[in-house]
Image (cartoon, rainbow, N blue to C red; front, side, top):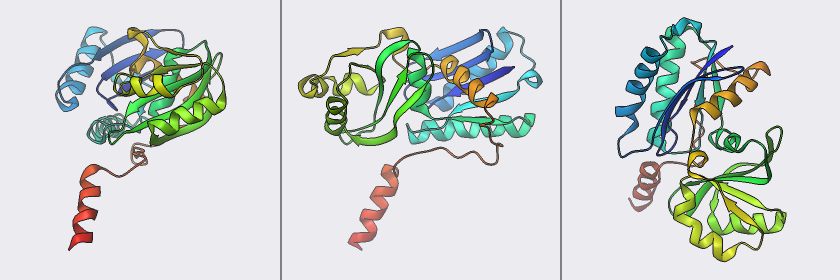
Length: 234
């Protein structure tokens, strides 16, 4: 089986083609460009480089959220468009589960942390020694609450994600448990990990049509919050 994977949920844009036994191609960029500028050109480059016949794709895995509202919409629209054009199913992979899968074989708790602004993080707690186990499903919480949850769990924890450099000082101050940080090649979204997990979900029957796909934002956007505030004042 062959999976096309797309992740534009955060600062990183990543495209990969994965099969059951190997990663055929992966193109990941973490730079100051919008995903509307990067995602389709990256996909086009991958297709050309490996001479990919898109009809040979069995499904399209996409980071389903949470994450950047704009990034999720771009990834979702791209996956939905491809799914409709190619008549292929989509695999909705929760962003934080895909990130946790980066650290396959790591003992203890895996804790992806994405900066959700306003002193909050998108996070979840996972175990990833031989298979992905969800200890606490993805959520949007204050970083202090995350530290409290980890202290209560009482296990060593490994962090990854773009929220780490933002909130590392707070975590260092509040954590009482043994903790580590994933190295540079494993600490951000990677479409190859997302696609490999998506392949597993596909074999379990966890797929959807392009028309059914909707991102999971976990909370309303800033524009929606500001609109509600204006309505209250009027």
